[in-house]
Length: 547
View 1: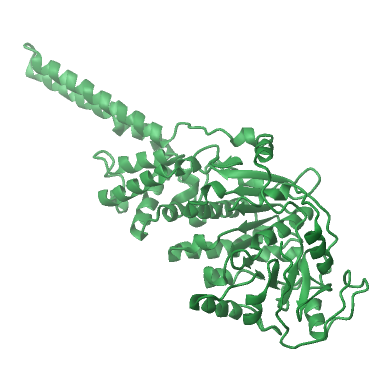
View 2: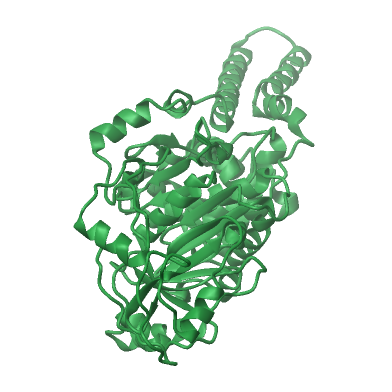
């Protein structure tokens, strides 16, 4: 982490303060405006220590910038240009949450957050940063579980069934238009009602193919039907999606999101690190999958109201990918999820480059802000900078100048106080993480993953009987019945003896045989009993059977 000084000066001026170990420990007298800012971050209860106040280019360790632990379910935003220290800020916050007994779910896009499980090496730069911000630095590692989407990359395989993923999120991944999304919703509705479990992508393909076949095309006629053209688009999208290797992400055993709420035996919160470096070329998939995890937590967790500390804090990296190309209905669902999951004890931090990446209705739900430096190299950059400044409360700083001059590991911060009011804007030099600031060695990471108690539960995919197997078996039964019918018909025509009445009876028996043995009666018998068991779907259409 770089130790560059901020050169942003307070608009109100003020004399420089002597540096010291911390408030009440021999620190010099703070300038009036700096003290007013510092007073806004005084916390009576448990809190995350982010760093020390910067004023007139000087770091003041007697003015600590903190976030009350009870306010973390009011959500937040960590933003800044590439290379400004956002990842280390996530690591710093995750460490302290774990130390306070709060589980964390953290996405690792570049593969460099895995070091949180190991103690960081001491060094001159770390010691210098700790001295500047009044930090008692000690090398520490934190309890972690590592996950990987579909087992691609190092980690316990993370899968979801197509049924639970739902039509809205799947439409986002497949980049379907509104009409195609509505048609996909009908397909899910039919599969839910008929008890056809959509476990993996071949199950969904089988149901789509059945609903446009001569036998199945009438099934949706009463509720709008499914056009052959739309079905073709969906099938082609599924095929292309699977050819990209995405088929591994859908299937069983499906992850139980309650795994993310666990604590280590020593009482520290477990840090669940989702390793995404191997799939970073599939941004639509991993960003939407992260949204599924959040929606599933919302679906399962009970209402708890305001707690003294959250049950889980969820860091959503590369958040702008979630909003790119999203429909209004999709954005509405995100807004509703973020707004309502607070009362279930979950805090959500979106991580992106500028607040402009986040829709206004969602941004309004983010009470805690950590804004790293922005660059203004182009007219678009300058416009983004001005828009960012407008999202902050009034400040004694010249924020438009300050945000371009912050060094790596420095940020402009405003959070919610213990009373729920916004704190004064504070330029801050952030603390150094205590864990390893880099990737954990691959061989040791692999050994840790395979040694996890969860590995045996989720490591190997299971392909049980589901929609594909049911529909395939019934199609084969129909073909056998048709073959038997053809054989009987040939035999009837070849007979030289027998009366016309007997032949008619044989043909009548043949029709009964075809209808009785084919998909008609077989489908009704195998899935007709599932009527009335349609899955109840929540936001984004996510759901699970038997919950």
